[in-house]
Image (cartoon, helix red, strand yellow):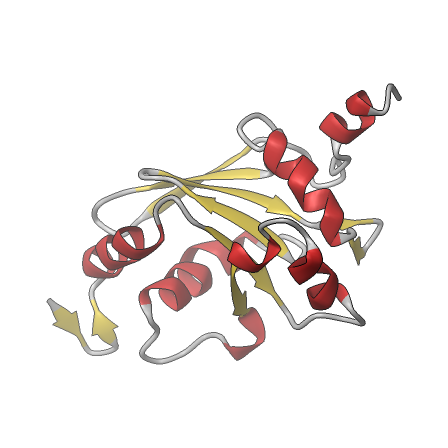
Length: 152
């Protein structure tokens, strides 16, 4: 059940899914300016778990730290990242445009289109492995649902 550096991958995956299925995470490298404050002002903005990737890797990671350091960070996506955790997959969308984080108010628009518009679908396996499937090009990070709503 436990290896030299904590629980084995299958156990870490099970523990991660038990805790986070149906939830969302924002993986970041700290927040600049008032980004976090603005996020918390948004409807539901305080409901996203946040994990600072600057503190990773850890020798004995928690299940969420394990998932981020083992499967998310190797994707080398720009941060912050929005992760939507499903039973068998994590939908990953980066929250940057032009090299800077988008305004937190755009996250609601991203959520509206997340099923079809995410950068990576990370398929999770019971053995603790995961398989990344690219969906959107990294450069494509417009909130299309917002643009359609505005008639643009």
